[in-house]
Image 1 (cartoon, helix red, strand yellow):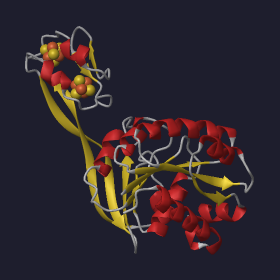
Image 2 (cartoon, rainbow, N blue to C red):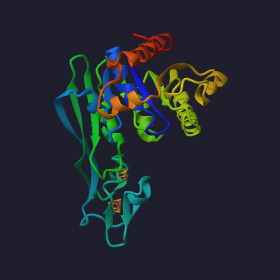
Image 3 (cartoon, rainbow, N blue to C red):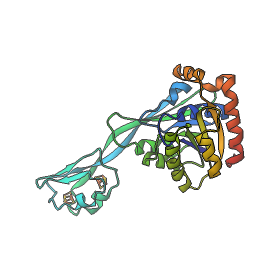
Length: 276
Ligand code: SF4
Ligand code: SF4
C-alpha cells in the first residue's frame, strides 16, 4: 500500500509526519518533494544507489526544416518558436511529448537527452528510503517524481509529496492508495487544506487529517473536521521541545512524549485505510 502525505501549503510539518510515521509503521519512505527533499536529514539512510533522470528534447535540422511552423503550432508548452529564420527550441519547457516529431513532414526533428535530476535509494536499519532531487534551475519536477514512483516494489510506502496542489502533487497522488493531509490550526492552514481535500477527493481514495502544531483546544481544524465529517487521524502537539528536536534533525518518535501521538495516528490509520 502507498500512502501519500500532502499539505495544501508548505511548512505544515509534512516531512515530520512522513518520516516519523515511516519509522513507526515500518513503511518505506519516498521523498517526492524533489525541489527541496529534506526527509533524509532526519532518516539519515546509507545511500546505496543513484540514477540520473533524463528527458528528451527536440533538435532541429535547419537544413531540412522549411519553417512551415507546424511543430510550433502543435506544441502545447510553448517550447518552440518560429523566428522566420529558424525554429528555436526552449528545451527546459519541453515536456517530451513527441508531438512535434509526429507532425514534421520534412523529418527535420531528432531528439537528444539531457539530465534534469537524479533519484537515490538507500536504507536505514529498518526501512528503505528513496528520494528525487531536481537540478537547480530546472522548472519541471514531474519527470523526477515519475521516475521515483514508477516501478516501486509491491511493498508499503509513505510518499512525502511536494507542497501545494500543483501537477507535481497530482503526479504523486496517481500512485497512492490512501492520503494523509497535514495541516496546522490557522485560517491559512484551513484555506489550503480545503484545496488539498478537493484534489484528493478526485482520486476517490480514503483520506484523513493530521493536525501538526496542535494547541490542544477545539481549534479551527477540529471544528472543520466535525462539520464536514472528515476523519481526524490525530495530532502532534505544538511545543518548544518539538521545535528543538526538529532543529537538531532528530526524529520526534524517539521521544516517548511524541511517540504516543504517532502510535495513536497509526492505530486510526488502520481503521480508516484498506490495510495490508
Ligand atoms: S514541422 Fe518540421 S519543417 Fe516544419 S517548422 Fe517544424 S521542424 Fe521545420
Ligand atoms: S516534444 Fe512536445 S513539448 Fe517538446 S517541443 Fe515537441 S511538442 Fe513541444
